[in-house]
Image (tube, rainbow, N blue to C red; front, side, top):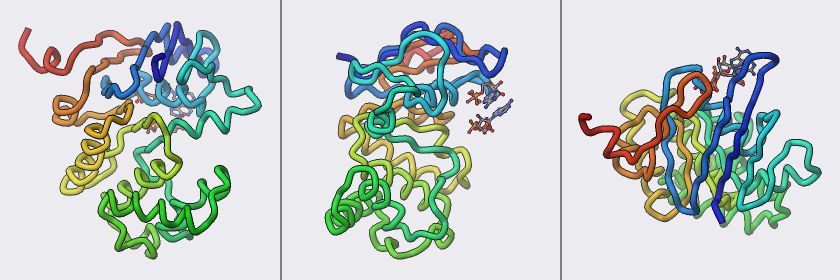
Length: 229
Ligand code: ADP
Ligand code: ADP
C-alpha cells in the first residue's frame, strides 16, 4: 500500500485552477523532491495531502485512507503527516521544550514526563537539546527550524512534508537543516520536500517532480534531472 496516493486531484482557489489533475503515488520510505517556479502549486499540493487545503475533486489517500477535510477524524489522520514550513511557526511565548510537548500532550494524551523525555530525544537528535529551556527568539533561524523538525517528529508521523524549509534561512544555516533532513531520509522516513536545494535532491531523493502552472510536467530520477540531455 502506498504511503500517499493522489488520483486526479483538482484544487481551485475560487475560479483559479491551482492544481490540475494531479496524480502522484509515493511508496513507503520514498523521498520525493518537488520543484518548479514560484506560484506553480508546490505548496498547495503538499498542503492538500494533509488537508490544510481542501481539494474539490479527485482522491487523496494516506496509507489507503481517504483524506477529506470534512471527515470527523481528520485531525487524527493529519497527525500521521508531519509538516515543516518555511517560517518555523514556533510559539514564541513557549520554551523549545514546551513547543515540542504541546501537541503530544494535548492531542495524543501523552503524559507530561513521557512527552518531555521523548521531546528531549528528538531535540538531541537535531543537536539542540542543550537549548530546550530557551525561547524561540533566542535561537538562530537554523536552530529554530531544527526545533520545528523535532516538534513534528514528536508526533511520530509516518510521513514528513517539507515546504521550502531552508528558503528563509541565512546561507550559513542551510546546511545544518539539510543535514537533519538527510539523516531522516537515511533512516527511511517517507518524505515529500518542496525545495530548491538540488544538492539535497541529488543526494537523497528517489524522484524529482517538476511542477508548472498547477501540473506535474516532469517526473524523473534525480540523476536524469542533472545529466545533460
Ligand atoms: P508555489 O508553492 O509553487 O509557489 P502555491 O501553491 O503557493 O505555489 O500557489 C499556487 C498558486 O495558487 C499561485 O498562483 C498562488 O497565488 C495561488 N494561491 C495560493 N494560495 C492561495 C489562496 N489561499 N487563495 C488564492 N490563491 C492562492
Ligand atoms: P509559500 O510560498 O510558503 O506557500 P506564499 O507567500 O505563497 O507562501 O503564501 C502565504 C500564504 O498566503 C498561504 O497561506 C497562501 O495560501 C496564501 N496566498 C498565496 N497566494 C495567495 C493569493 N493569490 N490570494 C490569497 N492568498 C494567497
